[in-house]
Length: 461
Image (cartoon, rainbow, N blue to C red; front, top):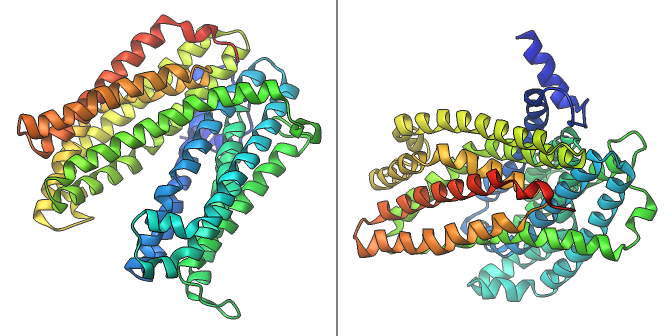
């Protein structure tokens, strides 16, 4: 137990950043702990904002929801650039080319700022039109347009928080990425009620106060990340010269980012179509599905931490010329993820009713949510391998293959299958849930087969 505590504290401190030698199990633990905690912190942003905004009124919640739906474009680009940053930085660190890793991080900063400014300015100028396009009433637009403008003005902070975390994860400094999210969330939690409801000399800003608090929190988190990346004793160091445009490196970065962005958009679009199919069965079905999905997303956050750890290990070990160690690391992380999701799946299957009951007491809503959870759980063992090995391919710099797999499994299989089972074969909502379990199983199988072929070991980035 004492040894475990020491190892856990070492993971939080981030005392090791190069994982090309030594115990693979130790490397997975040291990387995954801060990455898991980072994932939890990312999810808290949305939870905290909705918690306080809900006390203002329905229109305030609607304003946040409509704005966030359009911000998916910013998030998708940020996730794509973050994926590319992890792949490139980890490869350079593995090659023991820390100067090259610093240059990559500098170009990531440059591209993030330019892209986010373009989107932020457009969103700020056309904030009213965006809300109207999303179906907002004139009253909602009048009350919420400043919130939307403020959120789009903060696009650089949103994007940099993602992309700099990708650089830090790739360098092996996952603990700094974790602490930056802790800091950003801590500030947001403290300032949200202050700016929303007013305190002392600070006036009551309503929903606009949520945007101000979130922006300040994210900005402080980004400043901490920049400090970590520019200090001399960090895992990598970004110098002023590294921010000067390098056309070749930017092309490489954007080429990898397209794959990461596409994967996110493909997955997001598929969930939208599934929700549309479920909406034909009534609001109780949609409500039950929504509750089940939120429970699932929150509980599989540790899995994303393990997947991100695998991506860093694969990138660093390929850079060090150790493809076999890279492969072993990925399989080991996938096995750990399978054990975790197996435990979660059993817990959900057995205890689905009381878990869902914490969120709603409507009998029909609870029944749908329970059925959704139990069917999804049947695909957890396969999903465990699919998540980790897909992210491992991304870490190797092969972002194209997971994108193709996602398109096949989510658009060519999952959506048509959901409609066929639900409406043609009259399975109802169960058909949609089964389509997800089946497509996730197919995705895992395809990913395992492609990963085993080993072509990813020869990808040059």
